[in-house]
Length: 375
Image (cartoon, rainbow, N blue to C red; front, side, top):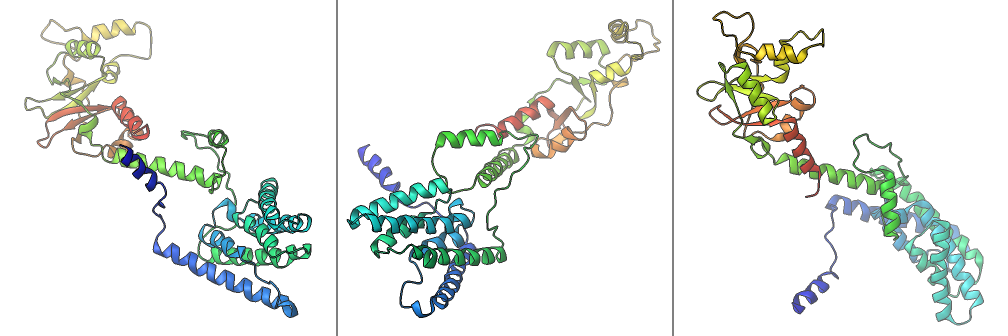
């Protein structure tokens, strides 16, 4: 048991599998190379006679990783890159100017840079390296924050804007505020509440997080509902009646079993129609609502005489055109029938077209709930 715990701890140190394909990796590699090349050439030209001094900062390599490999990250946005690197450089220059001990100056510079970036809403990991670089190179002139730190960062961002736009990536990755969907299972306020409790920096924008959650829910819904067949959710061995079943018997059966529809089958269990409560009420005069109960009793009461001027058996009031579904049919195929077709009950047949089950709206809604609910 102890060995297994150690093994699990060791696995936690291993990197997770990447989810991007080779094309996206090549796009990021090419973008970082081209972006840094353009930035380096322009900054070396701008340095002119000062080309012997620093004109390209090392933290820019880390910034390039963010700008071109993860352009959707909040840490890679233009203000994060420019503000993070520049303000961190200012903090580093101040630290090395005011603190004689390089070790203490380095610690204060990096810690101070993180605090400033949090306050200025431009958190950028390479900013810590920019502050440290200023200390290690003993940079004491605040003009260095303008060149090369600010200039390098600005040019890299401009290259990122051009390259990411040309290769189909949204950059800057502006937060998109979407109106709440009517059928949404969670709201933006719910996400805000969870993020507040989490209380840590996430390397993903809030709108992307929301989109990922919704798309994951949809994928899960398709996977769970897509594997269900009618046989999985139907009511097996349904109650049915035959063409000649008396109205009173059929009505009593529906009332006793708390069901609203009865399939009508022939002697081989093949469906020939369906009778619902609506079929019963359709025989009544509903223009006058008084005495509906009495009218219903008169309808279903058997006539003792040979001749009758009203229906006596379910075959006389049934709906003959019945929409059925096979037991192996995917449940997802029934969505249009229940949502748009106005169906409330669908008889299910087997391979020999014999009645084998029934799916009601309640069965279908229950299946939907299981599909979108917890696994």
